[in-house]
Structures are given as structure tokens and as C-alpha cells.
Length: 156
Image (tube, rainbow, N blue to C red; front, side):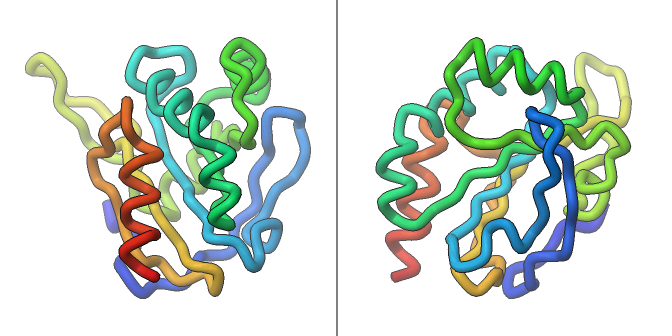
């Protein structure tokens, strides 16, 4: 598992969102881009994280920040998750784990003595030029938007 390092340029990518539409890296040109990878729709931590971003979405967009969520869930799962929690940002369905591997967040995990492959909850923050300025390895799911804003505000 090789995560992107600070100073890396946003890699070219294409993904399918909750509406079955294609999104790519150039869709976010000129924006500060937050790409957050999370394990699973409709689970407690992932829901708290998404709702934190939803609750401060206006503040994030006022600061020229675009949000993009990515998990291995299906397009239909993402659509239901967005509808259920009124999420205002896109979610990419990375069922083939292309982005998960590209960003280095898919790998071995341990839980209750079991070892398995899964998504490591990680958030990448890019500046307007597409340069990686921060990686949050274990985000605070309930206050994730505050973490993001603090990092961008300190980078000014």
C-alpha cells in the first residue's frame, strides 16, 4: 500500500458517481479538492463522516473546497446513501478498486484478531493547482469538516 505523498500532483482518474455519470480529475480544476475514502455506506462511522461534511458544506464551498467521497460500494448504494442523508456532494463507486489502489488506501486490515483486505479511511487534501498538501490518515469522523477547514486555513 503506497499512499500519495505530500507534494504529489493529483493523479488523472475517472470514476462513476451515484447518478451513473463520469467524473474525472479535471472536473475539479481550480478548486481545493478533498477526496475522502471510506469503508462502507450506511455504517456508523462513515455516516458520521459524511454528515459532518454535509453539515458544513456551505462553509466548505465558500472556501472553494470541493468534496468527493470514494468507496467500493455500488452506484445504487451511493444513491440511496445520498438520498437518505441528503448529501450534497458526489460519491464515486469504485467497485473495481482502481482509485483505492491508485491512492494507496486498499490493503491489509486487522479487526478482532482477523486479517482481511479493506479500505483504510483516509482523506487527501489538494490545493487549487492539484498539489497534495495534506493527508489525514485517521480522520475524526464526527468533526471531519473542522479538520479539513483547519488544514486549509493554516495553508493560506
